Image (cartoon, rainbow over all chains, first blue to last red; front, side):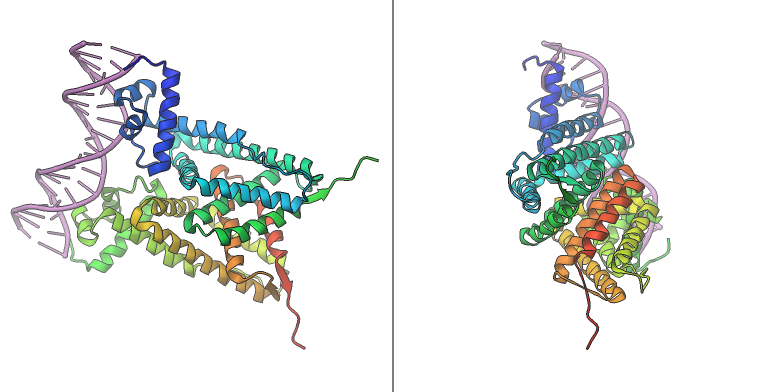
Length: 202
Length: 202
DNA sequence: GTCTATAAGGAGATAGAC
DNA sequence: GTCTATCTCCTTATAGAC
């Protein structure tokens, strides 16, 4: 086949791996399956990556960067805080419902990292990225609605991720969108209770 | 070795499997590792279980029954609602912190079930058991504090599990107990907002 | 019923031709 | 640099002696 620079080959393999993981799970993402998905030979995979674990670590690092940029920009300014939050949660649920296997893959990768000695720190960085993205969202929501938050931003971010994680798992298990919408309603109200109307400048 | 009735052998294997899964993860829970943990031969395992998947399904069914009985009975009557809830969450976190690998194992089993064609329904039943246990806790809290809930019990239960799941994952990832305590504080307040003081009978 | 031994296949990784 | 062929190890499952 054609000669492909290593960085490009690594990128292709990481994306192929992500597809295989989403479709069949981390356990089924063997080097052979990933190489086949990428349309290259097993040897080429090992030319680009030292080991399977190094590839999986690459996958985690990759989704980590994606996540940071995926802060919801579907804010409708002018609405009140609780509505804005509820719409945000709804948009989040819609993303998951549109591609449930992807979200499942993210959770599997977190747990895989937690179980793999050299990769536990990667799981922490994955969540640090989530928290950073959550902070961005919270700041944007505050600015769009004219509220500030009663609690420090890092604490708010952790609360938000706690809610979205819990909501995600529950939905993935039973796919009960109606029940999830009610939980999401609760989440929006609970978060809104931590908002404080900003005074206009005197 | 001694002749052991099949049901007893199955029970021993399920408990051995749970230990291996907690210690090393679902992926490392091979038939060999489980048989060794149970102190029996590989053939004996296959005499008791048709296949590895059948054994893992047995493990999930087992933890499912355990969970239902594990409703927190560490209620201190007389305290107000928010304090009771916060103490409950703290007790829950203490259980996880005392044996983090067990909680990790539960989550891995859920995801394993979601990925395995014949076992997806088992994951739903696992969560149905969680919700049932959550309902029990909520009723007990209500009775101990003299509150009733503004939302239907099934909805309250789903909210509670959503919160505990989210809290669990976040703690398992970074083991930041201080940050988790603040989230747990939020969770207690948010739930308490759904409580309604019961009027004494006229 | 329980064991040892082994079958049959899939895994990660590599040697060596081109 | 990229491939095919292969090494070695480990998996699930079973055959057959006791």
